[in-house]
Image (cartoon, rainbow, N blue to C red; front, side, top):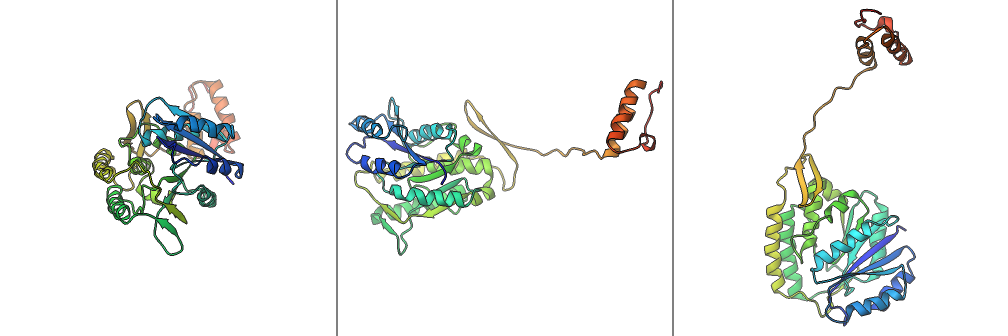
Length: 319
């Protein structure tokens, strides 16, 4: 199984954090590790995380941000740290409340290992027979409205952008996506897909992102998201849409990191002439500047398996 690192953003999670679950996860999965990112918590989260990490040094680690930056930035900082580590094949992020249980990580890894072309595996909370998805009706229907809007903005048939369980492959395109801060604190997941689509192109994005229907998901009490967050989310989605590059399907682009952000530029392909051996031979012989240079050109042409006397060319005056 691939080596996997899970980033867990935390803000005031002292009452909800299940430290034993994380300790058990790394103790039973030698190829897995967890990186907690404390996002400037005001309660006892930082102290609790230090105690948890002390239980399994090297497998459980902590990054502490000096102030609250928002979930998107906490995830981004953790992802950049994970993506910078050699030997880590897959890096993902997981909600601290474990609404998606850590046992699901193995399902995500299996999907990624089975298809090396995939860059992202995203959890999808679909209420199907045989699945245990516990979610209030209000959040379910608000989520469906939001998902439909996100699908339209991204021009991508995505079912669930906001599930807090996602796994990414170590890849330059993924590192580019997380290179600069997101516009939104809450719906950065949409921006991740928008950036990835700008780098890969829409058709390639559809082939390299996989939505995994979760076996289990539970709406854990104590969430910091209220109904008003959906209003903010719609506003942020408009901001994301406005900044998305307007590049047509199939266009060639250049994506590069700059101090101001990720720069997406249209690219142009310029055909170049490919020289056949006889054309190369003509070039070598004709461009010889003197007798000695001409002799070396003849030797090079013979090494190409050609007879210099049968190549049409102009000799130097002293040859």
